[in-house]
Length: 597
Image 1 (cartoon, rainbow, N blue to C red):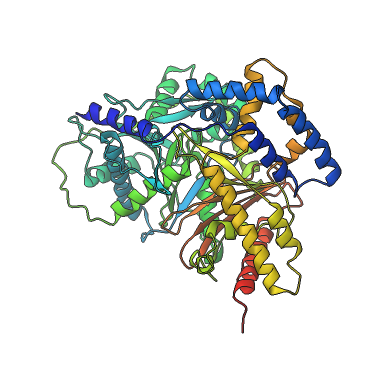
Image 2: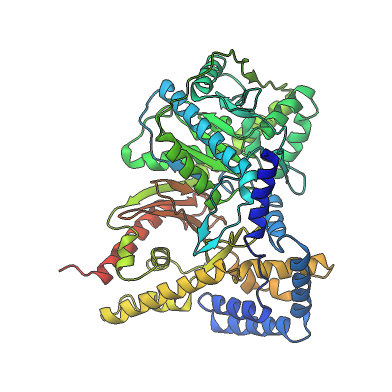
């Protein structure tokens, strides 16, 4: 019955959602040129227009590549997803910490010592196991967006999966199987990893009190603080970590320990206390703690950045999760978090059976001089990266998503219209989910638009009515771009597909993609993301480019949570300055729509 339900779950995920369409070539090229208009001077735009016209001419190269994509769409599960994951994630050689893995910091819980930490940790583990049971048995509710069902394929892959480093590209391993899949999680405390079995021999999950007892045993076995931080290795540049990984696995004990971490359902990081900080800076510090662990003298050794799911719980009530994007993405993670929060509201009424449980297994590593050197280098490099990251989180309290709704404006498009108001106009990407399609992942929503540029240029104009009308046009245009992306008609994945199709056919990369305009259009100086959750969570990740920013926001009914990141190595960027600019721009928009008496 269990296997049949799992298959039914996967069948539902496939059958209820349509395949992702390949957008028409002429449409994408036209929209690409329109997206370039606010970014390029007229002479450069004219040059690019000619190049794009040649590419899209009848019988030209674009037409040939489009036919290749149409054929690929007929014969594959999803014509772009595998390519996208390979190109965007697995072939990237940058460290996963900061550059790739997003972190979500959640509202502080009401405990402030290790006892409360372990009680909450046992509840969280039970909540995740309950969610996994729903996924495995096909009882997970179908999610809808704009009245259409969403693809559920990612949910089973969240568990017992891990990224593995390689010399030229990484790969992802999935150990979750309908029968005899892994039954343990990995717990890490004071840089020491443990295998904790979370199911009884009959397949039932351990109760919360059983899990709590096992966590207490782990705590008693991990009080030493002089252990080598093996997890730091996973924060390295992917090529460097790939070489260290091969050296590490030459030893049988190391290989067994690494495999157990990779196979675990997920990882639980029990962090040590961090230095007290002012309430004003607390949100920024906690987001940074979840994102990278705070450095080699803090909790960074309590991470295995390759793992798909890592839950982090501090002794001061802070908690959150970190996820690896080749396998996981925002919306499914938000669904999982919602389940955890609902589950944690319920009282634990299950009594623990009086069955003695085996001691959690400590994972050992043999560290020879070469591995010791790898760890030392990884510690240096991670501390440099952490010191380079500039992060500011703030809660904008003047209004929330209900304010723009009063004026029949989309809250997301309204917030997006602040970009460029008091800062540089640059290539900006927001993320749209493609889960309305089978195996769909994401595409970009691009800004600025011509309408947004017109609004920005007219902002100092004394005529309020004219400015309100221009704002409305900018917001509505952005909403249209959002609709296009959600319907699989965005431009970025299609352009990437055309480029990769040329490489697949053994052709040289088309000139259109070697053009400086394409380089400028894909150098996203501003990366944004909305986290539409019902709780006061803060999501954060690093910028896509060294001279860029990343801005995440979570709009609630009467306030909006923001996180802003930048790199200190770039003199032109400053996270705190952009945060103040954002606040100022939002206040200006409020004043424009609702002038003070």
